[in-house]
Amino acid sequence: MALLPIYKDEMLFDGSYIHALPFCLKNCKNDKCLAHYRNMISKTTGFYTCPYGLSTFVYNVSCDTTFIFSGLRERSTHRKKQAAIAQSDNRVFNPVLDAEELVSLAKNECEYQQEKFGLSQKMEEVNELLHEARKLNGQIKTECDIIWENSASGTEYSVDELLGIIRNIHIYSFIVYNRFQYFDTVLNPALSVGATYNAVIFKKLDKMRKLLKGYSRKNVWISLDTQSTYNYRIHQSFETLLFIILENAIKYSPDNKPITVNFEEPDKDCLTVTIQSTGPYCRTDELSKLGTKGFRGESAQQFDSTGQGIGLHFAKRICEQHNISIEFSSKYLGKDHGVTYGTFTVKLYFDRNKQPK
View 1 (tube, one colour):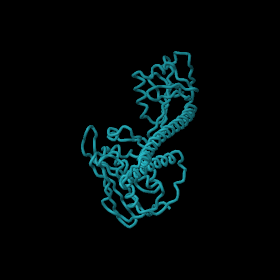
View 2 (cartoon, helix red, strand yellow):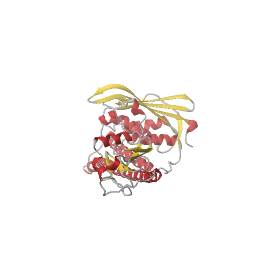
View 3 (tube, one colour):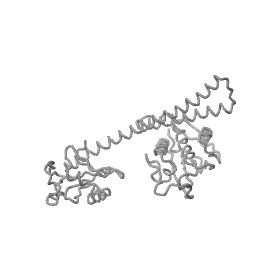
View 4 (cartoon, helix red, strand yellow):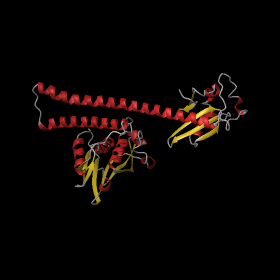
């Protein structure tokens, strides 16, 4: 239960220490109150007076999180005469309090609400992870059942058929591994990222290219247009970074479109990897938000409404582990079947002077 009357989802909710006035609970959706609350969202932290003479406290926790507490009587912003109509119902008595006391209550409430929201998000992620793991495990089982049932009936497989089944099992198991690794990172931020080892970046990308060949039923292919012998110290999670970027490119590409990977070494210590594909167009104002947990561009949502906005967020975290800079850009191409498409580019910048030890 909230300590103070808290406004969220265009509704006012009662508090346990300071109660919401019946008048406020009843009228929070009238035109005056709605206009007031919508105006409060853009305000800085502080006390304000509502249209009915009561106090509203706005608390900006961060650039994208604002708490609004209303129906209060703070000494300097409460207007006694104006608030008479709101206070006319004597079933609830709200004391007139100093700002310091109300601010203290509000801060405690914000901490509680954020912890509650964080726990709720983690539970959602657990459920999503378990659902996807069950689905992928089912696909692995299906591939194994095909081999088992056909071998029991004496069916012989060609080498290519067996390799195709093995590749599918490998892909599904890698995705499960990828998802659990993300889960570990989210729930256990202090979890060790493990030892580092020296790796040739081109070879790692080529491995992911081969792994993802045939992953999608679309006619989409990954082309490594240049080669490189550049090496860099990496953690085990690095392969997951490449998998996420290439899987995303495949997922959002239309049929018959290539995904190109280029390597450029401006000097002996640096490498730029450019991964370019065709996919949903990302507006300039959306590019800076890519990698924010839960964010998906408007065109990406038009293309596929089921995404969770987790992949690129995890990719950015892995880049931070490795001191790799990641950059996104998008160039408008046009519309097709209600989706706005563009050329989507991901650039990874490596500098051996910053590599993990």
